[in-house]
Image (cartoon, rainbow, N blue to C red; front, side, top):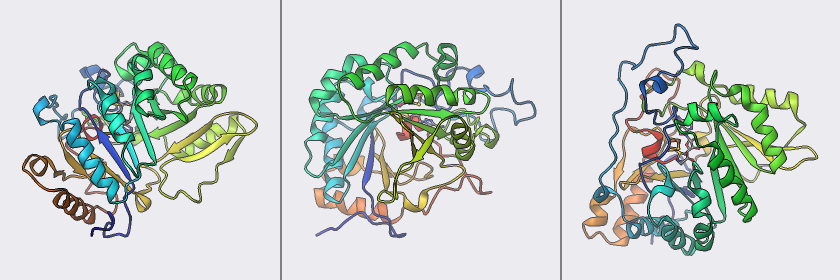
Length: 355
Ligand code: SAM
Ligand code: SF4
């Protein structure tokens, strides 16, 4: 009898992020920039920063052929086994998860797994309004949108698409339909959208949303990431504290939560700061990732991956898959190495890994 997914550092895995596609209809410049101009976005602002591409060059990406993607049956099987081994939280992500046909069927199957306490989806929101009813009916209750700017032109610059109106509509509909909480993620990049921190926070307060400010991480296909482009979480918080009355949310019972959270005093909504670069939280990490092509990643910044597809398609039993998961988790790295001399950016971008 297998027990749980415990790594060699004593951490127990409770959270599985499932990427259902590597494709995306957006081209966020911190993830999958489309044009050279977008990939070089900082040059005009930051004289003297290294030239692109860096020594390693940009990460070439090609969409995976469909046959290499796990089927919904395969995804559900891996998720069920992970849940039997103690995972309680599942998040459907991508790429853009709403691009995968019939994703609501997958959501329905995952929602029906005994032992799943929390099922959520992360989406850029562009297609959410069209899919909301089907997702709700399938059992989705929590959704996180990505929205880095409230300024139409800046939104277009950051995502490569003129889609702010659609995303705002998606957020409105999610709230109207009772999804709860509705979270909004904003990646903060110095010189790009850091002037919008207060506007975004105000939007969260007015709408009663949970807004998460995320530090820019070195996971972009252009390898444009530079530390100077990261606005440290501490700085974000100081700025917001200067403007809003904020009360710390008691998180003592949730050590593995990535966001440090504050609610607006006397108001609705809250903000959170996710600071993996300046204040790593690896010591409490309980997350695993399953990529769309069937690889398990034990860290966003893992250099190696563990391919489950040959087992899934080669007749492995549930027990064999479970043992493989246990073995993989045992080798989970202690933490990421951003900022260390030996740091190497992973060969796949956030869109492939599943954020
Ligand atoms: N396409 C969906 C979306 O954008 O919400 C889901 C996948 S996306 C990879 C998941 C999350 O990763 C998004 O909130 C996005 O902002 C975040 N992300 C992508 N690249 C990032 C980076 N280089 N640094 C920090 N966050 C990043
Ligand atoms: Fe697409 Fe999400 Fe990456 Fe933006 S962050 S390019 S929406 S996968």
